[in-house]
Image (cartoon, rainbow, N blue to C red; front, side, top):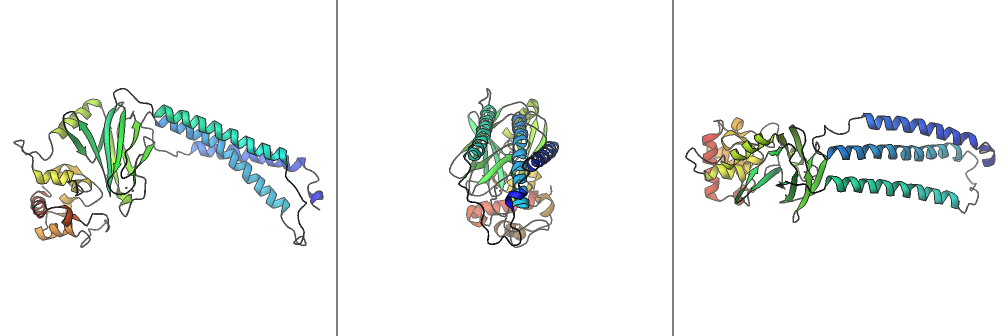
Length: 349
Ligand code: CUA
């Protein structure tokens, strides 16, 4: 029976080849037409997207070939009624076939690995005039530090980058594993407690692009986002100059320690401004409620409870478990009191 079915071997092979070519062409066309990625905003994005296209060109035919052989075998060699007790013919293997199906994937893999390595090597090449930015991930906010010659680094929850200036990010995590990803730049790397990871990017397109955390890091993972603003060199220099005169400075140049605490946190306490917008402190965090909107009509007891027991009352649209619940421990009694007083005075102003 088996012999009978396979009597015309040419026809199924031709059928498989024709259908395989058509399916591959359709698959590749779809793979290339669909916009998988956001717009390219770095010099790294072009080579990475091109690598991706090459992977589509190679992986779709492989997928189609395997699928067609599986479907063909299921249709032609399945067990028919009455064949339950039969065994297939004793086969010891087919050396030629095994050599082919080992050699072809091996060649494909070696070629793709080599090409990927070349692309990776290329986009990670050190650039002259590189700017260093430290990226700190913690539940659930990103902080960016711009080291300054002979001074404390400038800290920001927004990532400002000058266009066409190569940047090297040094990425750290303070608690659990996060992942620093700017999809428009195509580059991402895990932020791992205890080690420093790095990558290079040269932004080459003005605009605002999302920064996201790409590693499930807790309840607030989905809100661990901010924005990167790629601006012109003069705009960047202006922004840096503004940051150098800290938001915490008062008119006569004094630094208000409570405002600074709010905007930058302490070694132990996460900065409020990483997650909350407060005009007076110049913060634009989005993960938690906008304090200029939620606090103006609240009394000191409410504000204190919001800091030390944030789950007591959650404003609509926000969820429990994202704000740290340990501010009673990480802030001193004086810091807490000053913060409550400060928020009562400035929120909504
Ligand atoms: Cu941090 Cu997900």
